[in-house]
Length: 113
Length: 112
Image 1 (cartoon, rainbow over the protein chains, first blue to last red):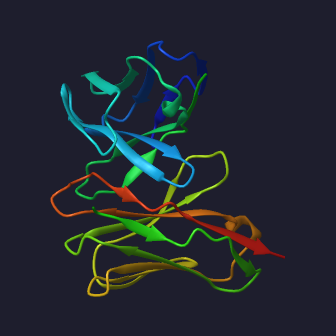
Image 2 (tube, rainbow over the protein chains, first blue to last red):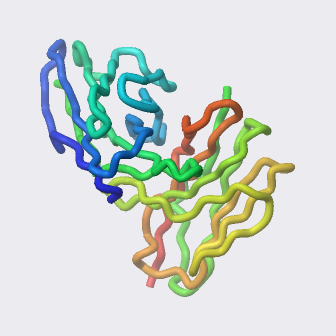
Image 3 (tube, chains in turn cyan, purple):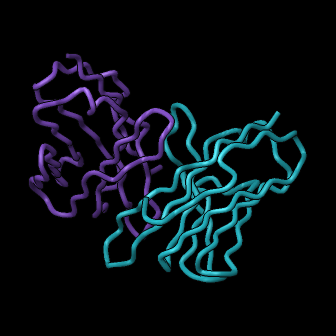
C-alpha cells in the first residue's frame, strides 16, 4: 500500500460545509496526487504536489484547494461542499525513482447531502 | 482534448482462457502507459507499466504497446476467478509529467 493512509475513510456532510481530507505517507515521497473517481469518468486528477508548498492544478480543480506544509501530509479541502463533489477520493504517490508509476491509498468515500 | 478510451465491458472470459483488453489514446506524444486493477470498493493497484513499443511480460500479464497506432493492450493468460475486476488504462500525456489520464475501465468477469 506504499505506506499511504487516508482519513477519514467515509464522510457524510451537508451542502455548503467545508470538508478537509487528509493523505498521509510515511516514506518521504516527493510527489503526491489527489484524484476523484466517479462512475463513467474513471479517475480524474484534482491537484498534485511536487514538494512541500509546491502544488499545481489538475483536470478538475474547481471547488478544491490543497496544502502541503509537510512532506508526509497532503490535504484536500472542499471550501463549500456541493452535491457534485460526492465521490470517492484517492490519494496517490510516485516513489520518485525516475519512473512515473503511481500508487494509491485506500480512498475516502464522501457523500454531500 | 486528450482522451483515453476503453471498452466498458463486461468482458466475460472462461476460466483458463486469455483475456484481452484494449486501450486507445489520443495524444500521439504520450510516453508512459500503465494498467491498474481495481476490485469493487478497493483502490487501484498497479499491475503493469510500459514505456517502449513492443511487449512486456510479468507473470500471467503481458502489456503490448503500439505508439504508431496509439493503443496499448493487456493480456491476461490462464484467467482465474480472482482476475475478475475492473482494469484501468492510464497514460501520461505529452508535457504533463505525472498528470496521468485514465480510461473509464474495462470490467472483466472470469467464469468458472
